[in-house]
Length: 482
Image 1 (spheres, rainbow, N blue to C red):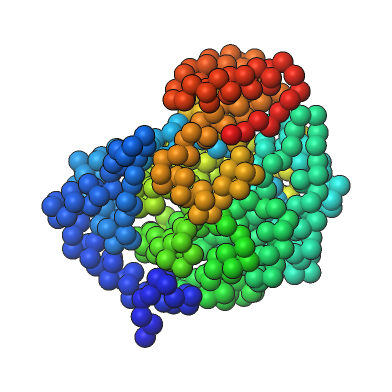
Image 2: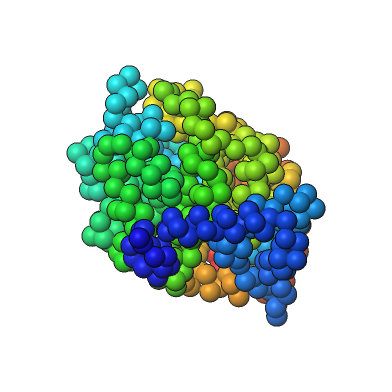
């Protein structure tokens, strides 16, 4: 029997079934242990230090106790602390991005995804480089600066060479004042050598969802194809970091397995990365199973309510305070609105999950990976964020200034990341307002910028940011950053 070891490079040891089950038993037996719960909440609470804050974070066992807790006033305190942590480390900034689907050819048999190879009626499509360019221009014309590219696993149709060529094309498109400044990559688990190639291509974060940490369920849900190999998939982040990729993004697909099991596994994976590589995940995503083509989410027995979903996100924020958290357009405006206040720091906007969807006037559905719940335009999302007290940010400065991996985490943990992130967010928002925004969004946007500039603590930084925003307003100069 495998023994739990967060420093091990073997999947069965750092994501250990016995440890997860023991954790869930511990959480269940202590879910109304008020003294212990209060102790954990106090540990999670951000503490003032110098000019910033420090957070200890929580272990997977501690966080699992909070998730299991069913005392209403303690749940309210969890949400309150999650909001405090979010504001302490990320302020009121929300980073915007869009997925770009390159190809839906796939050789895997995943039971929850319409791209599975047995689906013979879905339209299969792979973008040419000319079509990639059209998609990028359409995204730039909306105002996007950050993309997450997606592709099915198919060594013939979607080899690493194709992905690398697409990345080169994306970075090479400069349309009017538009440019994609960061390409994150969400493709299948691969080799150290291929991760080195992605690093050399200048990617941002490498993202790979585990789908489920429950090995028996994983094997059942992935009956055929290379993704069937649980160990190879689960150990992918270690190979990515060995290949030189500093920033990696984790995630599970909630609804496939019991959520408390997935929650513990997800945090154990984060602890493993910290233990082995000295830096945890750059991002954690929280998608839920959604309807798509021949996929009916009701065929899975583990769906979760919105209230449970929100508590999961809040508990993740308490456990890994420095990690970015992502919620996509899988979720409705109402759900996304609630999640923004309890830990989410990145959202997608105006997403189309079909291959070649952005260059089409009407939203195509024939190649969608999942149904999009929030179908608003990017301008509507930007305006909505500001109306709710958030700063829409298109910033990619940390990545391009080399503040990645442990360098980013060090600044974040010392509370220093706010000194550059806040003005950078305002300058990229100014770019959006000048180049892409509707009159209604411009009106609220300039008021937001003026109000938020006054919150920058350092006079010199505030003066430089104000001056750069003036250049953005009155010239074609762009891409200022601290």
